[in-house]
Amino acid sequence: MSFESTNQKDSILEFFTQASNKHDFSLDITLNINGAIVTGTTVSAKEYFDMLSDSIGDGNDIARKLSEELANAGQALEDTNEAQTNFIHLKNTKVYLGDSKPTPSQGKILWRGKISEVDGFFLGKISDAK
Image (cartoon, rainbow, N blue to C red):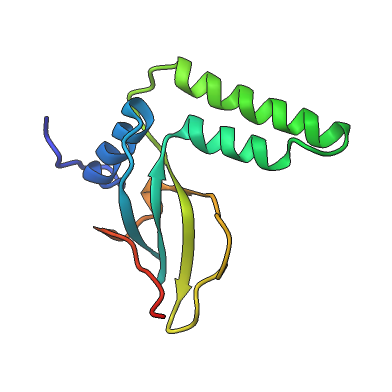
């Protein structure tokens, strides 16, 4: 397997994302994206859509319909064996801009981003100093 690529996506980051999608591999990671720092734990696309579905499922008819559609999207992604991965999904995410406190500062936040927009990354998560 070659990790070098001529396209805009980092092939190693894409490899980690494919491992998350296909093998439920979780990895603490911090991404640099257009000057922002995004830190969290990788999850599969299916898990991302399932958790998103669960977060809006208890509500009115529209919320329930959206929840169903998100769950279906997650299942469809798992059923297709797509070789190319375009998005990375994180849970327990925090976004840092400059020296300010992270946004959001509390909660279990799900995040989805384009791999092609990532400028760099390192393994591990940034945690707040107490």
